[in-house]
Length: 164
Image (cartoon, rainbow, N blue to C red; front, side):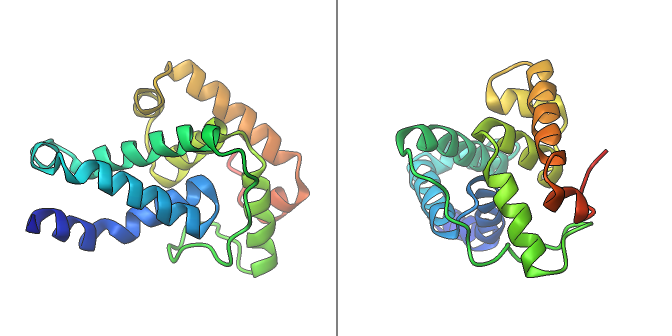
């Protein structure tokens, strides 16, 4: 399955960054991506014929994250660094990044997923709703609550990352 291997080599880093933003831990992110890729490997011929095979794999990662967190009631451990993707407004110091990561990690999993899908993946509310299996209004409620929660933390608003 050379096509699958090529996909993993070409998009594995981006998938790992996506998973990291969801769970906040490098090792858990690796587990999420590995599990998602194992699930997709057996059906890869069908998946690669879809209009967006990467979107399909990301949805598997998202579903795995949402169910995985329910199954494992463990507290997140802050990772040693943020992935190598520069985002507008990213904090410049390790202390600020660490504080932001801690605040994001305190959000409920659906709220955190909505923020990652909206601000990192740049998806509209309708697409996020499809991925999460809810209505666009519910997505907006999750986003509003998450941002309100983040605004209550001085670490977040002081970093200049506040989106409003």
